[in-house]
Length: 142
Image 1 (cartoon, helix red, strand yellow):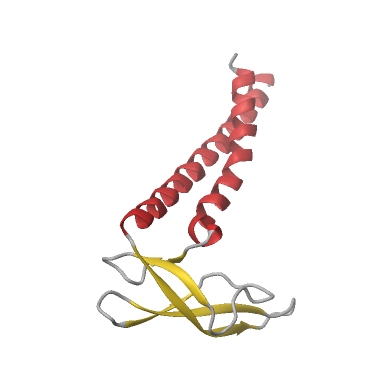
Image 2: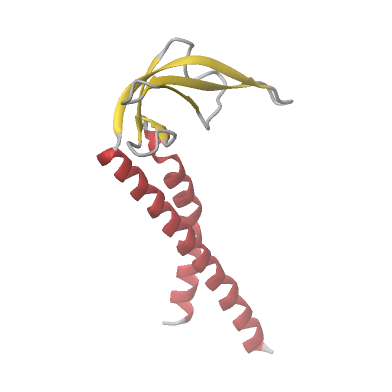
C-alpha cells in the first residue's frame, strides 16, 4: 500500500515537472521567434489611429489600433492584442513597431511587453512547476 502512495506522488510531481518542461520549451520557442523577428524584421513607426473600447462589468479597457506603411507603401492596420485601462496610448501617438518582411501581419510593438509578453508569461508559469516537480524528483531519487 505504501508503494502505491509513493508511486502516486512520483507520478504527480513528475507530471508537474513534465508540464513545466513543455511550457519552458514553448517559452523558448516564442523567445526565438521574437529574436528572429528583431534580426530580420523591418522597423518602422506606426501612428495610433483609434482606441477601441472594450466594455466590461469591471470597467472599460482600451485597445489601440495602429496604422503604418509597409515597404511597398501600402497602408497597414494592426490591432494590438493587449488592452489596458487607462489607455497606454493616445490617438495620434507615434509608436515604434517591427514587422516580418515576408508577412506584414506579423507585427509587434518595440517595447519589452510587446516583444516578450508570451515568453515571460509562459516562463512564469513553468518556473514553479520545474522547481516543485524537479525538487521532489531529485529528493526521491537521490
